[in-house]
Amino acid sequence: MDCILNQTHFLNARLADGTVADLTVAGGRFSAIAPAGNAARSGAVDLAGRLVLPAFVEGHIHLDTSFYGDAWRPHVPCANGFDVRERVAFQMRNLEQAAPMAERAKNQLELCVGHGSLAMRSHVMVDAAVGLKHVETILAVREKYRDLIDIQLVAFPQSGILSSPGTAELLDEALKLGCDLIGGLDPASFDRDVKGHLDVVFGLAEKHDAGVDIHLHDRGTLGLFEIEEIVARTTASGMQGKVVVSHAYGLGDISADALAGAGERIAAAGVAIMTNAPGDHPFPPVAALRKAGVTVFAGSDNIRDSWWPYGDGDMLNRANMIGYRSGFYEDWELEAAYDVVSHAGARALGLEGYGIAVGAKADFVALKAEHVPEAVVAVPTERTVYRAGREVARGGKVSFLGCPIYRSPDIA
Ligand SMILES: Nc1ccnc(=O)[nH]1
Image 1 (cartoon, rainbow, N blue to C red):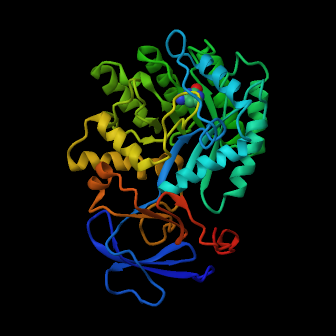
Image 2: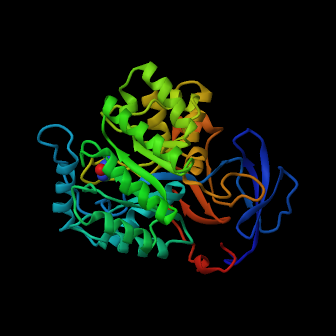
Image 3: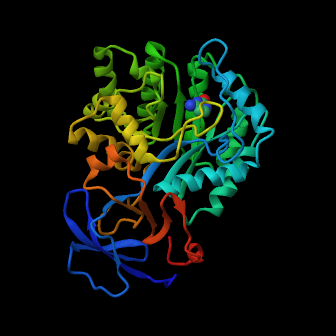
C-alpha cells in the first residue's frame, strides 16, 4: 500500500441516512461524496455496505490516572458514602506503584482509537502535591500522538482550588504550558465556597481565553444551584458555547418542574452537559435536556482506576449504556444515544470539520451494522478506523500498517 497516497476512494459506504455512497478523500478530507458506482476504481477500498460514521468523540477521560494495561487493582469502596477525597487518596497510593504514566496513558489512548474515537478531552490533575507533573507528561503524550488523535486537555484541580493552596497559580501555569481548558471540582461540597472557586475558574478562563469544564458531583438542589451559578457566569462573561458541566448528577434527582426551567436556562447559556450514565449515580435526563436544546455529550470518564473497575474506551458501547439507562427504545431515541457520542460531542468540544460531508475531515469508522439504531444496540466489534482517510485501527487494535504516515506533511 502506498503510504503517502494523497487521494483515496472508498466504495459502497452505507451512510447514516441509509444511502450507499462512494467517498473520495483528498488531503485528509472528503472531497466528494457520490451515489455508489460513480467513483474511479483504481486503488479503491471497497467498504462493501459497511456503515460509515464519523469517528466517535471521547468527551471526558482521565489519561493520567488509569491503571488500564497495568496490574489489576481491586476496587476499594468509600468508608461512608461517595467521597472524592477518599477516591483521590486511593488513586495516589496506587499510582506510586503503577507503570509510568506515559505508558498507561498510551494504553488508554490506543484503546480509545482502536474503538473509533479520534478526538478526546482529557482532564489532567493539578494540585499542590503533584504540581504540574501530570500535565507535563500528558502534554508530551499528546504531542507524540497528535497525528493519530486530537486531544484537548483540561487543567483539573482534583484537590480543589481554595482547599489546596498554590493550586490557582499551578492552574495558571498549566494553561500557559498548553492546556486548552480550565477545570473545576464541586465548588460547594469540596471548597465550600462557590463564589471563590468560580472566581478563579472564570478568571483564568478569561485570562487565557480558555474554555471551562467543571466536574460537578454535587446532587439535588445543591448541584442545581451550582449549575445555575455557572450558567450565570457563562452568560455574564460571554462564554456561551465554551462551558461544560461534567457529570451534573444534580440534574438527575430534581423535580420535573425544576428541571424544565433549568434546561431552558442551560440551553440559553450554551452550557453543555457531559454524562457517562454512571452506575448507581443519578445522571442527567438525556432526552429532557436535549428537548430543551441542551448539548448533551459523553465520555468514558474513568477507565479501570480508583473510581471504578469499569470502562472500555468504546464510545459506541457508551451510547448503548446511555440508551439503556435512559430507557431509549425507539429508533429516534437510539439515534439520540448515538448523537451524544458523536455530533453532540463534536459541538461541545468545538471540533472543526466533523462529520461525513464534503470538506469534513476524513476521520471515520466503518462497521458492520445496517443503520445507527442497530449499531447502538449491537455494538459491533468488527470495525475499521480511518484517520485522514488512512486506516489506523482494525478489530479494536491500532494497526499502523507499518506506514510512517503520521509525519506526512499533508495531514493538518
Ligand atoms: N468522576 C471523577 C473522576 C475523577 N475525578 C473526579 O473528581 N471525578
